[in-house]
Image (tube, rainbow, N blue to C red; front, top):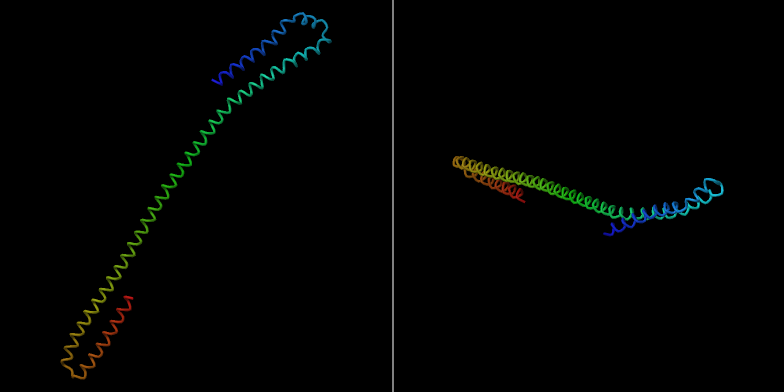
Length: 184
């Protein structure tokens, strides 16, 4: 509504500005005839008339420029707002993509850590299993030696049997110490 009023007022001023000087010229046809005869004395009057017409036209031009600038400013503001909104949306999209990328990388890293933990646990389990198997094998070897020693003890004298028992006790103590050192 405000724009239409400004446009109408400008159009009215433009029409009046054009009509007024044209009407002023029509009212003075005698002077134009006189101008044709003595050209030199009346030439200064013509620039004065142009100088009088020019301020009105200059005012009209300035008003038109002011109106154009006023009309242009809301459009520029609207464009700036649209550009800012587009920039904000782009920033939000970039942030969302970055967040998704970070989450994806975190999931991958967590998966790798889980896999490493499982492998480490498996190695530890395998190591414990191997140690248990080695103990079982040592126990079996001891039983077999014990049986062999018992058979040979029956065939030996009591002094030899006593020496063999002392040796076995020393061996057992040594084995017990070596097993307990690995547990610590």
